[in-house]
Length: 211
Image (cartoon, rainbow, N blue to C red; front, side, top):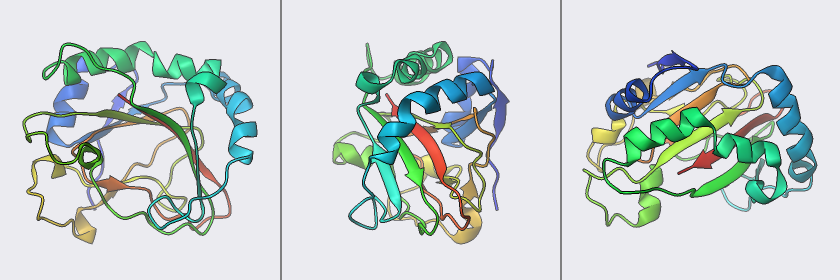
């Protein structure tokens, strides 16, 4: 089983971009202190609790997705505008554009009993019209709980951004974004990934912000 590279929270944007080019994903450890996690959770938990589960196997019958975080949570606005994320976006995305914009904000809560999500690439949201040389997305998942393989840590296939569309990932090629609460999974729009299976009795909660 492959493992994702972990970098310190103050890693350079150039180092982040290089790993995204090579592997398609990496983890920044301990970006948020405990007090900031508690601030975020205090603002978003009421909305999470009011969110219905998904209606198909992709969105997840035991998964909730809570959006509109910029409107609902000042703390989430700070995550969107986090200097380390924007600096990495500047290096990673501006190779193909003059400016980028916020694409999506959502809290993904994987509840106990949720099976694995089907593997996919986020860039397919753009319909396959972009050439492989253009990377359309810089994605983040901020861990609001610890992420473990047992509780649904994101499945990631390192190196898959350069694979042909016809190649399917084998079980031994799939890694898991295991990380402590407060850490951040960074991944490109071209890497193969998916939500994991939650075999525990507790929720796995992450904030998905994409540019």
